[in-house]
Length: 469
Image (cartoon, rainbow, N blue to C red; front, top):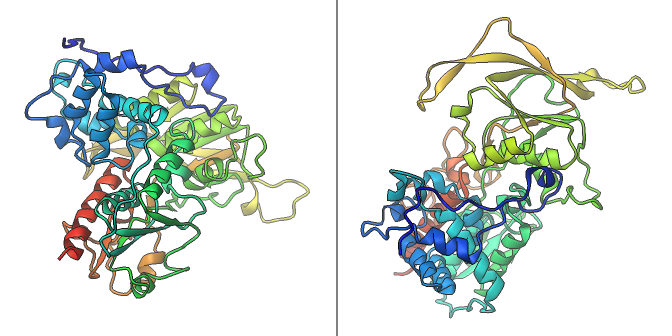
């Protein structure tokens, strides 16, 4: 029987006071009863508009119908036909702007909780299934993947299923890319990422870490080693800064550095030797998901007060609503319509160094108001004269976006990039070099996990067409 409730079954979460100081996962996931009740809200539309909103084209009504039939493993098999990272996507994919935004139930109420159901199915499989992915027979072709983030892992998984010998080259010492260095434990436990990576290895994908393409090896050398195609999914790990005075002070981080120290280098652990600023007052500049992650991580590391400083209003804030709501529940203060103009510093009296190399003691901001829409349709922030004021902070985390690292571009002849450093590709993900494909943040700049996965899937299809002739 259909469940005609206008609202989703709520996601169980840890208590805000309890979770604000621990790195345990915030969202606890559906029970079987909750999942079945939510699945019953799906109308099983013949036109399947939700599928059109999914970058990896998961057959959503089919897997939800399996849940209704209590066939959770069958639901997992349907999802994994098109997605290499179902447990990851169920946690971090912005379903509200993609598949769920197309759901018919959303016209007169809340859409079906597709992401919550995907997470339930993946977690159920991981808890109950002992089936190991099969290492499929090889077709004699070798493909190199640069980067083990969501685009690289997706491309690797799809090509492995087609019989290709795939090697993933990862610059860091752990596979997973942004999934391990960028997204905190309380949103995406690293054990989940590790399990997804191990599944790909079981399918025959080789993953080599500490391999910096452009330094350890070049793209040209990969071809010389016998790889017939190369996919570049190296992400966008080069942080952007504002260019204001004081950004070189001790206690100023890019969000990338701060989260990498906390996540990949395990600074959140009590026994960690990774240096990171703890305690005091923290300002995070920016309003995206990464800013929310940095702010909530700072809180868990012991900050007394954490501010989100954003130059537009709450309506323009680009972060997911769920992440904003969780941040507010945890006590993070939003200083909206504010823009930093200078980071103030001081020097320890016993320190004879230049004041520019001192420590953060505050941040000067100017208040803003919204003017005419910009080229993206968002109202442009305009400074309010004589409104400068100082925020008392000890740490500043800059989270205003990232750009692709230029290393691969600088070491690969004939690889064209745009003015932001993104690799230029055609509609098939092919770059200006024959046999070299690219996708994800290395092409678009910082975007979502699921859009990067979609790019990896497209590239795998194109590489297969290129080599299967």
